[in-house]
Image (tube, rainbow, N blue to C red; front, top):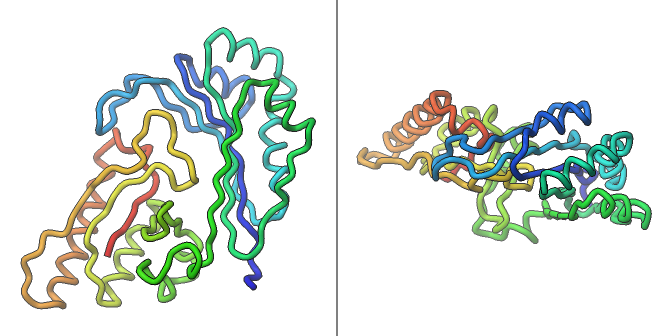
Length: 251
């Protein structure tokens, strides 16, 4: 059995036609905000949105993260409800759990559920199992040769056969793969590394694919490394893709 506790966090998501900063100011938080008309690869964003997350924590106490979200709203519940009603906002409390053998406390009290209902929010629960033999299978990428930091930072997609990392780790991932002789086949941008596709974003945006041509295996490895690093460096020039904080790496 793994010694790692499950990793849990909770999110407040809101979407509609509104100024997200009004909600941030009301609750006294900094959150990811999105505005209708923002340029996305598929066209302008249709709705305004807000996404606030508690810091991920390795703990059994899942209800405590829900309480953190409710605790922000509770002192301002009357005004919060006025705004969501006036503006016809869609909102949810999203619970995310990453676990292997150990699972968190899953009980939400009747009073907690009633309080969530009182603010008009739905409950969205994502459970991810981190045991390789159960979730990912024999055809999934092997991360055992990666550093402990890269293994902890990795997030598996729903099919359990692809893996993504936060942007700050991608150069190290590319170089680690090339150093061990793997050909990096492509990069895809992802918005759902925390388990939720934010309002108005695509879950995945194709970004780069290896252009083969070198006849020698070692040359292909280095060509793929260079292409992947160059493609990743071009991301900084694309402000319209700044909300895609995760990169899926295929090799």
